[in-house]
Length: 89
Image (cartoon, rainbow, N blue to C red):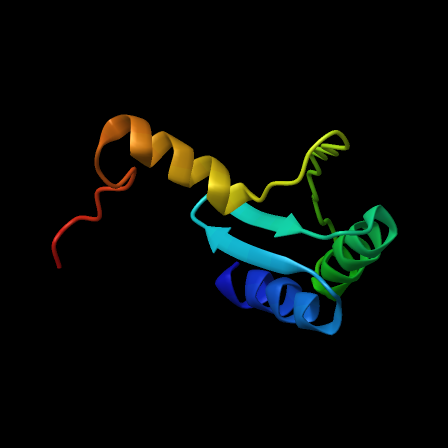
């Protein structure tokens, strides 16, 4: 599936979004919800398969500004260390 996921992720570069791919999915951020949905649709359609599953969870925070990375930063401040522990290679 890596090749198909790569097609979907590559499609996101055509939109005004930022994204981060992790082992469990891709977090996409956009200023405009229409742009977000257009990017998600394009990524979904980029996958070549007889069955494609796309799961969306939208967090539309309207009362304040903030990014996903800022949420991670807040957790790391509480921890006093990085929130990830990458295994040694």
